[in-house]
Image: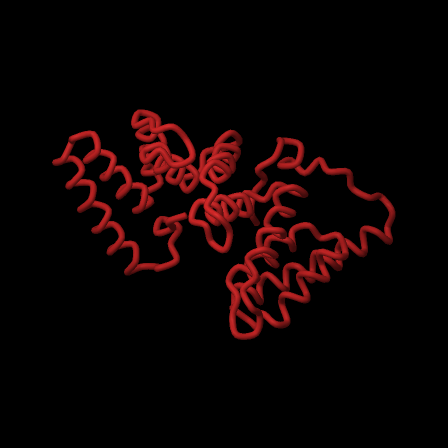
Length: 220
């Protein structure tokens, strides 16, 4: 499951838990329904069924369902029209209520690229910074490194960009390696930049042969 982007108490599961048996039974039922819906989501089952199920779980107090409802609304499809305004709303609820890291990454990506919303690089940077304030994350490091390299939403700082991108590249993320290659060229280190560019292309080919969904091929 996605991790927290809020304080340690939430990440450690110290949210007050109801003690009455009836409430616990309801929560167990919601957890079972959520697990089944997530499994169906991973199998790419009918979104027309899954979205109402996730929304019903949200109404029952299952905060985790916000993230999955947002994913369906962002993706859209034949049976569920894409609705970025609603997707952002549910991603925000997932962050505000239980601090889902993946929801924060989604919001940062949406605002950085302006997917159905106006581009807001400063807001995207704040999301990435909030994630990195809690724990290292290759995608947050990659994106914030890119933003410091280009001066998008933050001041241009090639030294800070280098630290971030080196950290992201340690995970073997091919986009982090490619971004580091562009930084080296920007620094005038053309040979290193070319070597890293070739490495990124080769790693992408090798990793893609094994699994196109490998997290090392994740861009944002």
